[in-house]
Every structure is written in C-alpha cells, then in structure tokens.
Length: 231
Image (tube, rainbow, N blue to C red):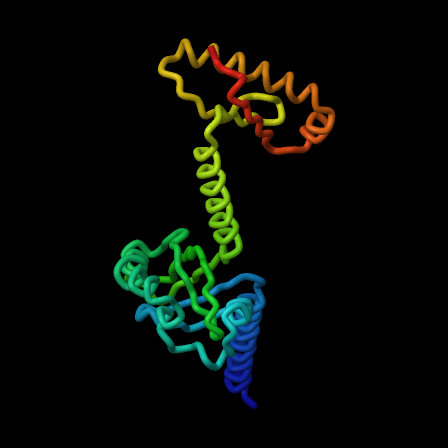
C-alpha cells in the first residue's frame, strides 16, 4: 500500500472503532434503562411508546414485543385516558416536563395501578420534543391504606357522635384531643376541660390495667357517665 492508502486504511479503522465504541455505549445505556428497578417509559412526540423498563413490563404483565409503537394511553383506565389527552400530554408537550401527574394504569390481567408520573424531555436543535423520559411511582398500596384509614376514621366519628353521654378522647399524655360536650361559651369550656382532664386522670390511675397499657396506646377513650355532670 502507498502512504496515501495507509492513511485511508487508518481512517477507516478509526471510524469503525469509534462506531463500535458508540454502539457499545448505546447498548450499555439501554441495558441500564431497561434494568433500572423502577417503572420507566419513553414516548415519542406522537405519544407512542418507544421504550419501557423491565419493571414496567413486570408490573403491567406485558412482554417487550407487545408494547413499542402503541400509544401510552392504551394502558390507562378510561378516566385517566381522558385526563392524559386533555391535560397531561398537552401540559408535557408545552412545558417539556411534568411532575407527579396522577394516572391509573391497567395491567394485562385487569389490575389497576395508581401511579404518579414525572417526566422530562429530549429536544432537537429547534427545541421540538422528540421523546420523553418518564418515571412512574407506584402508589397503589399507599392509596389503598389511606382509603382504609379514611373509612376507619369515618366509622369512629360516626360512633363518637352516636354516643349519648359526654365523651372525651385523650392522647397517651392525657391531653384532650377531642370531646363531645354541649357547651355554649369559652369560659364553660375551660371549666369543663379542666374537670374532664382531672376525671380522666383519676379514672386511669384507679385502673392499673388501663394505666399500664396507656404507654403504647395511640389514643385513650374515656367515657364519662351521666352521673359525672359538668357544672
């Protein structure tokens, strides 16, 4: 080979090596994206999925071949689909980002997942969005627990209001957190509070079992019978 030929051959090798290195980095980033232990997905500027993480597939029950090219809204409940089309996606396309948007995804087996979606975008030189990078936080159990707690609180409130006698709830320090009394002004309330607190302490002090269990109880409920009138 001539010197010129050697130079061309070296240039070709340099280009090939750079291309192979670029492809290796691309594959490494793809593996990192797919294997990240959280629900991730990316959409193009048409709202169609271009990539998802393994966790996304696992939680929703799909195979990787079933997902690319489908609109992300295909995997939402009807209510969330409307929210995404009318609010979520327009907001993202306008701002190029979004944070904690509430979406309900539907798994292949019909299970509904409550999520909070946050996303950022990749743009071309003209500032147009080309794709998104979204993180989905699964809050299904958290919301279910809150709903159960709300139901328990509602039941407790209904029971509390149904009790005909004067009633007071204290915390573990015997501080009154809620009371049911028919008191018309602040002065009468102050007197009633002092008396109820004293009666509660006396009742608990006279009941060893209640006193010993109070150290770990979140609330202690004391019912003052009608004969314990408030003056």
